[in-house]
Length: 271
Ligand code: AMP
Ligand code: MN
Ligand code: MN
Ligand code: MN
Image (cartoon, rainbow, N blue to C red):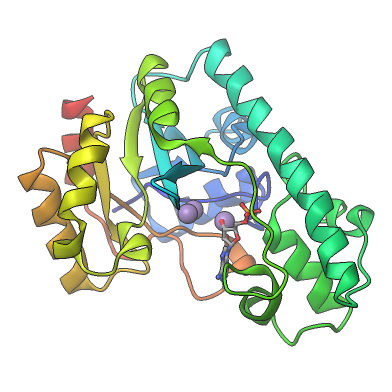
């Protein structure tokens, strides 16, 4: 069993990288990819504290594809990305800082009195909306983190504040140049019906996309099968992971989906 989509407290998960390794051992994972948003800090710390598990370097990037926000996963199956890619990723954090300040202003105008200092104290290098949700919950503005997203922070929330996202094609090209495998994350969140996705997939593959995250905690078993079939039809590798965030998303367990090791073996062949 493997899990190729996980977050540590270096992005918006709640477990430290060391705790995530421990949890992986506890649930019996054979391989684990750390795919924090916009940072390798969690992977780097885990790599320095390995406990025998097959650890894969990954990252999750938010990109713009034809006006939509589309998440990309990158896997570095043949070794870590080089300095150039790491420097580029550091630059992505800057667009977050800008958005985070704007989001604070928007929330305060809506009567939600939280500060950037309070939010920043919740996270590490990467501060994201889940850290805002945690502060709003603590200060009693919402009854749950999910309610913070539904009412205020999510795309249909009253205080939604977009951020500058890198162009899909540019991100794919940079991942490929760094020796990584670019994979479309949780496609079901973009369009629930795989059949409606075919037009999109052609363009994404032409841009250099190499894989599709068919197995994901938001996909039903039936949907996962349909995504895997679609991936094969477009010669894309099939990947999968839970999108574990620890207590930030309590419904999602590490290793959810029982994804078999053969998925990773196939990925390594493609890479
Ligand atoms: P950010 O990258 O700062 O814009 O925050 C995005 C993160 O917030 C995602 O990675 C999810 O963990 C979480 N998130 C985004 N939208 C929602 C939503 N509608 N409900 C719950 N969590 C969400
Ligand atoms: Mn997240
Ligand atoms: Mn995502
Ligand atoms: Mn994720």
